[in-house]
Length: 417
Image 1 (spheres, rainbow, N blue to C red):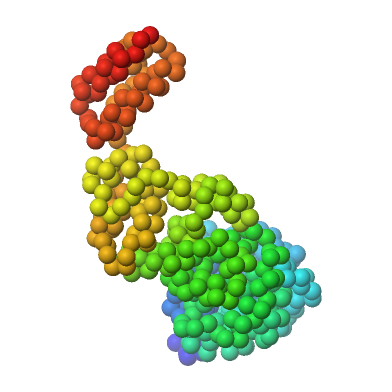
Image 2: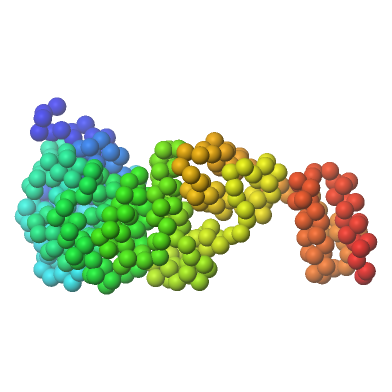
């Protein structure tokens, strides 16, 4: 393999569908290169999930070339030069080389170009301005290789200008440093982010939410959020984050003790917060959280069930039945993050393991059985069932049907119909 074709053996580059898309884009005489994250990740040995391609062809021409080869095309952002090739194994985003004509801090009006250097200059960070030919030859027009080697996230050109083009780049800076950086953030980039932070207020809740959750998933999320707090950025986008101490401990637990490979950001977000139901509702509305995530945060932060590391097996089963597996595990993680570092690790891990292996029991009592005991049709059936169920839970989910029937009889006898 030639030294200048260093990614020639990359698995994703040699997939049949990837090659078919590349061949189609070259069929019209233009050029196309893999761009951004797939090249960056391949160079440092990280997993490549998404493949992006940049091309000199216009979106309309690229669409026609792909369809001529039988490849389905979706015009996902054609006004900005982006289409998506849909193959049996991948969705590959293809974007025409662009230059910014006008920006307003949230979006850009673009013009198409055939100049690879101009396209690179409009990108955010040097480590994202990397390209690769179909044969594996890497192109680095702006020094991204050196920054990648040093694990340094640095804005292209003037950091203030890059940020003013799209203020979301402030949060992207912290995300990329959390995922790919080492040591302290680039000083000039960090200073620019702090000085431009008020521009974040004009962004939509959805865009802010997505970046915050991506940062929260990183192994270095604790340091990233501390840096955001120190630079005044967290006060703009997430002023409710009053428990960074608990958040950092939870991240450490998941990285060091649970070896989490793809962290769930919602418990991590919850660990930062100390809110009542109204507070969660307001936060969820601002960040446009899903109803599911809003309800999960509310339950996690307001549930009153006592969760401590020394619960007995019987207490664990009771809590799991009443709370459900997911809420129980969320509360265990919060409890563990409140504990002293390094203490009771075995016990907390055991609680999570018990939750994962738990199978919810079913009360062997039907409506017909309750009616046969003399309870009239209607709401009384539900009331009697609930009373028997409470006894059954207190009895540690006894599976002796005779005992359950006897308890049913006692409940019915205590009621005058």
